[in-house]
Image (tube, rainbow, N blue to C red; front, side, top):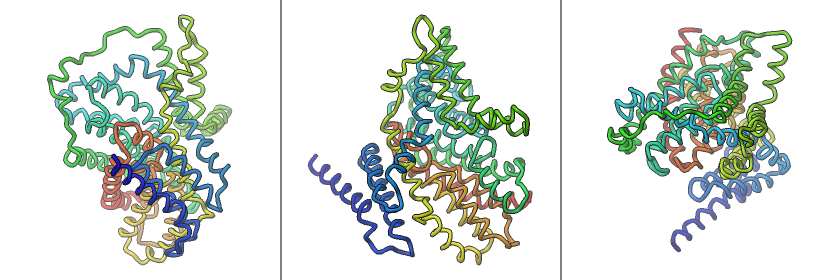
Length: 486
């Protein structure tokens, strides 16, 4: 125990040095002192997340950022705990707690487990599970989709008696996060990151990239990345699948119990919330003017935290048998993963600092890459931008990645005739969504890493492997397809 404590203290000392002293180390490669400081904070907290804990290092992270001269502590708190994403996660935890108490998730889980394909073998089940996420994720926000599947995943594990810490549970959790990210890069429908890249291209060239050609390039890349990732899980991760032996499935039968009135109302409200998340973006593809167009725009502008707010209030107001459908105090105590929320707040803050224009890390990257890239063959240029997009989106904000990398690509390639600029833009927009390796990448990564089903190290290892797979297919499949359609 003493040696373990000493090792922990050594790790903490190294992390504290990086977080608080790297600013005073001579800057390298032209980075500013604050750039060095923010990189040190990121490296230090990442070490603590990987080896010590996820909760108190996320709080320490905010204090370290407060010492960066270009940042303001009030702004840091606003970006982290006051962020719409934090509130969205809090509201969604409460809403899914209510849904989790119904029998519907058990029915859905049983539908997966007892289906004919699943009964052919455990890997048939994994493929079916991942395919369902990929299909739905083409039209739904990745964070929303993750929270729809999270209680289903936990119910599946409960039915199969899979415990936290077992590799099969880790496989399902990692697959959920990775497939949510991949699917969100396959279409621009309800996905903001591809739309940002497409919008920047349209602004510069006064012409648009249509959805059909985007999907011709992005869908095969996404499907091949998903297949490659599943093969990695099958032959490299190799979980013990004894839970899926025939004798383990024999005792699991379809749920034939009747649903209660309360359950029906809770499900209806949850479906309403999902529709409020998805419908405005879809309808705006077809409705271009008029009062309903104005209403949809106004509602969409309220953000993703507003629909679950409506759902929570509705569940608290509606009573069945003189009891509210949701006890919000109970949900806050039992349904909210507070360590995960604290970690998410920290990742929002560090992601913002890494891309802060006054600190200049992203502009340093852009300026240092420009001269080197323009003299390279087009396929190598595509490879470099693919690597840049996937690295940055897994270390910071997807939105910032789509904006910064696309802007840099458009500036660097302007006037070049031997490269498909629309194809490059599509690849960047798609890969900006492939955020599944580190906690700052997306809130669902932080939630997964702190869930107990998987951990930060596993998410990093297999997230980065999936990232490498996506870079390969972006370069050798997606870009050649772009050359055919543009």
